[in-house]
Figure (cartoon, rainbow, N blue to C red):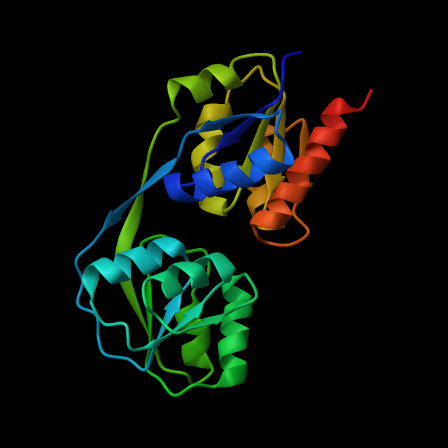
Length: 235
């Protein structure tokens, strides 16, 4: 069995950030970056609002491309998205890490709307529906889509080899996009899933080991990777 390899399939910027953190914690781990999605920004009219809701860093970038307005307070799903929004010039408020928790956080604050929610074409959780149901006017605006991208030749060769391949999975959609590349693999597959929902998407490909992050963020996934590496190293 060869040296374990970490396969990162998030968009380029997020994968590179995770790669840097992984190299610090696991310096002997080979890392391959092969994004499964590429953002395509869309033209859309953005209505005026009293605040913005960002549930991803890509949404921040898409909004900044579409509008020069930085006056509204930005409600952000977690620290990384908040950092991207702050770098863009927004006053930010940071949520606990998931869209559901951010929705609950906003409901507790009960701001006066309308809030504008720039998001991608594919969504895992409809935060606007929940907030509107709670009486907080929220307007969704589709500003980008994530087009599928095939795995690189290097990533495909790793999956066709005999060394363990560790794959962090950060969403249900990325899990679904990964599945075709896992059919017929020969490499032992170790999955670090950010949530049970993301893990469930891969049940039919039968990973050799699966670990669900204790917290739904990059640090939680890194901890899960560490647990998987310990299992690989165990006699």
